[in-house]
Length: 161
Image (tube, rainbow, N blue to C red; front, side, top):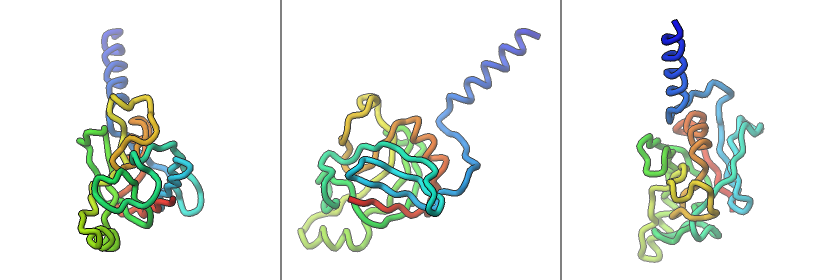
């Protein structure tokens, strides 16, 4: 009987260590990022459900204009995809570039870039470090598990300066 209880405790402990968690609280109806404050908020209508400290692109001031500029986009976007096998733990995609972003970059004869995500941190940045991404929004891996469970595809995201 003791062996059975030990095995059961071990199995329950291992399931708690997984990448994926579930969420059954209020729906996240919008994500808001305040770049200048390095904060991200998950909202249910006007109520803040969760807030997170974030890291941004390595050149965080201003709207992303071209591929490789290190800026995080600003404006209205949507969460449009999920990557459970991300190099940065877990990630959810932002539908950058939008037509206006493509237009701005094309006037410069450049690509607007893409692959902008909210994601976790690789081992190298596990303790933080302010703005190290190529334009993505970074949180801790523990926080990313929570965000991945709470935010659905089709959720609007507003990224403010």
